[in-house]
Image (cartoon, rainbow, N blue to C red):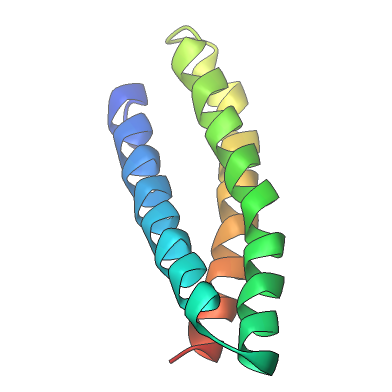
Length: 95
């Protein structure tokens, strides 16, 4: 099992990767038209609150003590998993 700092780093890197992909999809949505634009926007609207929730959980985790972080880890993992499902769904649609 990873220690707190390793876990934080891994989660932070994953959130940055997903954030960068969302930024790219936002640019694609601005250039798209019709149904494609609506699909991009729908996925972005679904992912944005999940991304924000996962970032908030990460911040809570960072503020926690070494002994308390294990309790917060479950919530952070759930938030990241929810975002991952949305991200994968969108990614598969835009291949």
